[in-house]
Image (cartoon, rainbow over the protein chains, first blue to last red):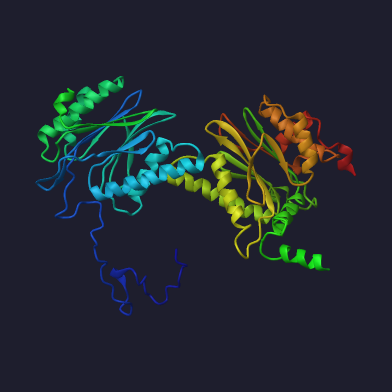
Length: 241
Length: 250
């Protein structure tokens, strides 16, 4: 918002490099600090499979347990779904540091909100907040799934690294997405019970674990109902089926 | 002499406690509120009613320029009493906080949360050096989770919740009237009737439509609605508090 200036000098804005006058400062390019939402060269691509399914009685979130670093399995026992709200959980896909930082911030925000207002954040509020965190310049390279229950019922949100939030019936994220989505497309139904949804989620993760190099080593299943968040850990997926 | 000098030390300049624990500047600010014309809030099962005495000092003044009722957000109205200029600052603050809540959480702000944002702001002006307290009391009314809520802020920065209240001139008389006539099961029309009759209680000659502000936020629409002078006139007639014609003819 610059005030209009007279045009007698014939000079354009000095910040407009392409048309700077000969008497203006010489402008270089801003250094690229690699702060983009695309993974940098040499950085690990997302190696994970996470799914979220909404049912009448609650939400099921399931994740594999492998952390990958290129072609190496960096860790064989990682919990990629975390409680961030008394009736809300977030799955992690992408940069571990970004996800950990995001979860710390979200927990602080939900507790502060409850302490100040005497009521829990709604899922609309929580999903907006996650979107704002990702959008607000932190360049957090994560694609989480948010699942939770509030007074309006169950909600699942697919969230992209740039902060876009979309409410879904079921969704996937991570490198094994396509394999998991194939299962969900066949087996999801809005009348699924919570137990049936756990079974569908388990088979979706198993499908990805079988075919995606970067997914494996077991499964975590979070069940979110109005009573809270319950996270199960199973190293042997087949034992669940 | 000694006592006088001592008192002066505690009521000039910055707000500090007197030896008996009083904040004179805040008490003086409350006096400023009493000098403002009355504003009334009534909570009913169907919504919140805000009414204000906005008589102007001269027939030459445009009635619309008397600011007593303010829309803070779609679902929140604020009525003020006291210094108009101070009220404008607080109302702009409230409007901004309401929008910040929408940006941050994607939701309309709660009435209790908004009131407390405002009172926390007011409180700072009773403690920060070089500041003067706000010489205004506000009535914050609106719908939160489908429920009507009604709050008051005062110059000390304390939030209160009410079923019905008044701030400004004739506060005690109007409160007595509200206490006698408030019923829990009144509908919005009943609330409008109560608010206008209470306002008339402090104006023996009756009310002029142009001298009254009336706004409602009902549970169904969850929208702040200001009523026109014509609508107000029909309400005043209905409740038999319209100023009689011989007053106009004088």
